[in-house]
Length: 306
Length: 306
Image 1 (cartoon, each protein chain N blue to C red):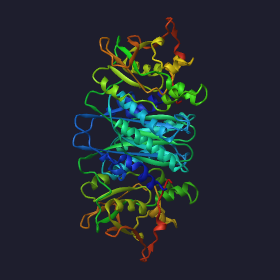
Image 2: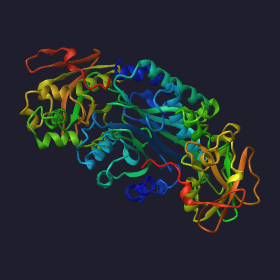
Image 3: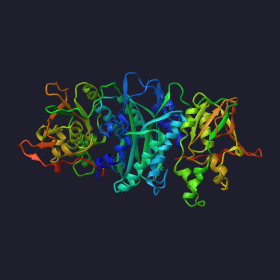
Image 4: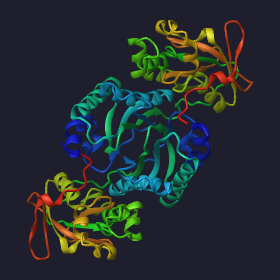
């Protein structure tokens, strides 16, 4: 099957309900912005051998690539609108792999209310790479930002932390296999409803993709503030608690895609989130154990590509 | 240098004049659409070993990645607005390579009036991959489309054709080295001014990236029409004329990034373009030589990734 037949068969159906895609048959998409909205745009890449292993079901690779972008939209309080797919894959990729990849996208498009609007399929010499650029919409002036946290604001996270980092170790057979943890790595849950709910309430927000300690450092730097967090408050799943590395994974592991946000002291927190610390005037992130000891910053580095 | 220091040092300056980038320090860009405009969005990938060789000056790789996207904006009649860069590169990439890459982007940002608004830098296991998603703006209802060509419309192309395909052969030492042809491959010229000029005039437009014969087939299919073109009308550069393969490269070679468009019979053509044929009611693309012979369709296939 050649490139154009492939696009027609597998990707045009993903764009057919979205007029701005022009049916994927022009040089670019043509979009009408709804009035009174701002456009939120994010681009994230997942690379075989780095962000995914390569032998996963292709539908999971597709869904993760989409979801890490949706998580960025959630972090800004935006609603999903449309996305652009740049799929680079080896020339000998099986059609069945591409079919599964498209099925995964289709499933998550329905689930999250987003449509394919354009993109590019290319051949690589070796491994697969997926870049998705996602566009979201947020009412004017209401986007969540990383800056804005103030001293005494409470620091919250959604869901549980560390599961994904532990799940990756399970998939690599460094820990016993565990479906729950592995699924948390393979298929993160973008917190779109929570992000929307936090508009007008959170003083700062971002998603946790590179480890809580490191990402909180970015939120604090953007806000000109610092933070202290308490390891005994970290929300851990039952499966994570069974692992000796749970607290380290929760602090430093990547791929959580939970929301990290701050609320003023008097604010009511939404359901299902956990306070893990407090914003301080003193810069930097300090991590305290239940015994009152402080973890050294050197033990808190998160994921870095370089 | 770690990922965050790298982004700060090399990429933040590319975004500093564009408020919607939020200084690259949030989870996504936040953009205010100018009123009365439509958004034009395109995403294109260039892969090492496929779209570029790998030993080029990194500034050329960056500029080509940006320009192939700008060419799509030109094809729709849009003006450049901002772009998102997904740069995947081996973990051992030299800082000097990244510096040259950023310099190339900076140079073309100034030249074409576009700014970096966001993106992602990631590590790959082996080769580099660059995906750029470019956003452009076009006055409402004025975007150029592939559909719309009608029988008797004249078919035009900008510039000269086939240079890039010949230039690639020079770079691969399949032809004698030639600076002009090689530069045409390495650094295409997006026809933004022409695209803007064609708004309200051209009945159909696209860019030529996969060979004139194949791309004209797409334009005709979108328009529900056909075409005949004449090989003796193909615009060839002096350097191309010196190659035996010039006509074949002009018809079937990729990477031209010239505009292919149609005008009604009575319309005045802009300066610097060449009529290469005419739209017909009969479907399909027919290519005639100066002697009146017809080239077989099998000899006219353009570039395909698969």
